[in-house]
Amino acid sequence: MGNPKAFLTTPRKEAGYRPIHDRIHDFGEVEQTLNSNDRRLQASRCMDCGVPFCHWACPLGNKPPEWNDALYKGDWKLAYKLLNSTNPFPEFTGRICPALCEKACILNLTEHEPTTNREDEAAITEHAFEEDYVDVVTPVRNGKRVAVIGAGPAGLAAANELNHLGYLVTVYDARENAGGLLRYGIPNFKLNKSIIDRRLALLEKEGIVFKYNQPIDLKALPEGYDAYIVATGTPEARDLTVPGRELRGIYLALDMLAQQNRVLAGMEFKKDELVNAKGKDVLVIGGGDTGSDCIGTAHRQGCKSVTQIEIMPKPVEGPVDPQNPWPNWPRTLKTTSSHEEGCTRRWNINTLEFIGKDGKLTGVKVQEIDWKPNPEGGRPLMVEKGKPEIIKADMVLLAMGFLKPSHPQYASNVFVAGDAASGASLVVRAMASGIKTAANVDKFLSK
Ligand SMILES: Cc1cc2nc3c(=O)[nH]c(=O)nc-3n(C[C@H](O)[C@H](O)[C@H](O)COP(=O)(O)OP(=O)(O)OC[C@H]3O[C@@H](n4cnc5c(N)ncnc54)[C@H](O)[C@@H]3O)c2cc1C
Ligand code: SF4
Image (cartoon, rainbow, N blue to C red):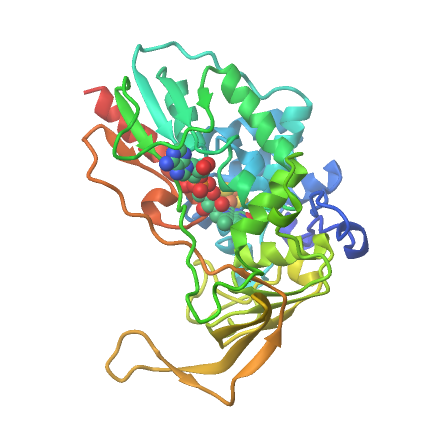
């Protein structure tokens, strides 16, 4: 351990975001980077705890104390090797992981100044690509073939793992390119798509075959494989079937987010197909991360105003939720870079009806509500408060989560991974699930 007391003298320093006036006009990544000296000082704050809760909190079992130590000592190559031993794609998590490890960091317990693991991860990985020591593995083939259905983070992690073990892996995806929600959900201002392309080029070089525009019928999987991994995510978004849903101007969040990412990739759409917030009063229904991504996208498209409403109560403000204490992930109020760019946020708001004129949305009738404990137990009861009101809106984005998919009865050589198995979750969990599922496939085929 380089400097076990550095945390006493070196405060946490985040690279922070580009200034709002600068970032709001483009879709470039909002996060900045520290210089390498400051980055190493940040790594020095990791204090080699007797019981490192970060290992436990990271779904991949990443070991920040080991790579932070190497980083502090200036051994960037060793840091990448240690990081990559548990994390196949640290350039993704380094950008968009909510850093469960940092919340569980012992430095978060008292001072709320955890180590900067996520940013360290991104820096170590960018350095590895710049210095060209991200190795291309040449697997020794074992003669068995595996099909992976779905090229999101779960499918890619599973394919990578099996390919390294010697299986010939073919990845099928319904869309025109790989990445799943990394490419067709998460906005470019959080994750530039060239980062995905760079990793895909490596996976292809290592022998993984990708087949695009292949929507696979899960009841009739392609023939000729020894085993299958279904990593098809959560394709169905939760809808809101209140009166007026048929009005023009109401979209599912991914209608906008996926299209915007495609536009940035050079795809062209007819004017009447465009989902664009330019000059509009936008209402985002759903207070989570997808809603936040809609806000940032609406700003960059040039909206007039954005309001975000959520049916659940406002989370606890501050670093700790007493109901959900350290080292668990705190369900406290989260303010993202997109919220900082300007947005009215309201909680305890139920949507009653979409209002329109000549078939076009003009506003949304909402009702303030409260949640009371249910005397019979179970879900709290929703009670109305005050009178309904109308929020002016000419665009609504529904960001209320995704339905957990159901699957047909599969044969014993078919395995399910990622969000397709768990329901909507996180990139880091999808990757961890892909790796675990690959191990199960290997066990099955090695019998
Ligand atoms: C807007 C948004 C923002 C998010 N932001 C974050 C974030 O910042 N950080 C984070 O950790 N998580 C975030 N998430 C969650 C994260 O993206 C998902 O948990 C993760 O992508 C799930 O990975 P997956 O591989 O299981 O599924 P997906 O990423 O959904 O990939 C599934 C793939 O399967 C393909 N597919 C589906 N059906 C078929 C079929 N029948 N045949 C062939 N292919 C098929 C799809 O085209 C897709 O490529 C976000 C999600 C959304 C929607
Ligand atoms: S993947 Fe996420 S939780 Fe795991 S070490 Fe990296 S930032 Fe932390």
